[in-house]
Image 1 (cartoon, rainbow, N blue to C red):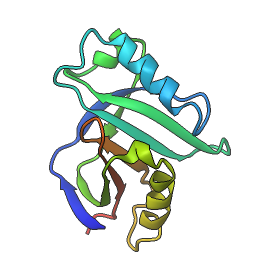
Image 2 (image 1 turned 90 degrees about the vertical axis):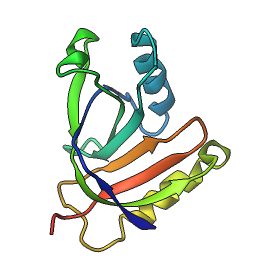
Image 3 (image 1 turned 90 degrees about the horizontal axis):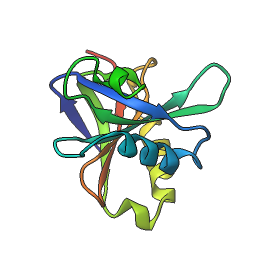
Image 4 (image 1 turned 30 degrees about the horizontal axis):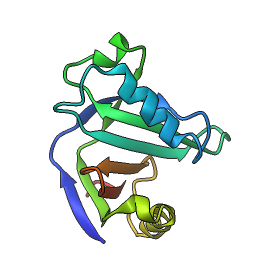
Length: 137
């Protein structure tokens, strides 16, 4: 595990998964189907417990301009700049259990932002960066 700094906020829009974790893949499929092209796009997964509903998962993509998500009937979210504790998973689809195990370990780290979330950054087709935000110093 290592610290990683996002130097800028990232504006995204998302499709909410109907269930967790089963609904993750269908949420990404729906999100990608809305877009004419994935050129210049990066995918993210954002999850956290909310309102006694268990874990709420959002399949997200970076917006190319402010308010773009509304064009596709999607809500927007800002991934906050700052320092995150991270772990890169190679070939994550070969062992999906490693994703939850990695987040369990990341969530044990000191100095987590209590208003934070679990963030997945899909680096390419096989690798992902698991991230949790740390409190601002």
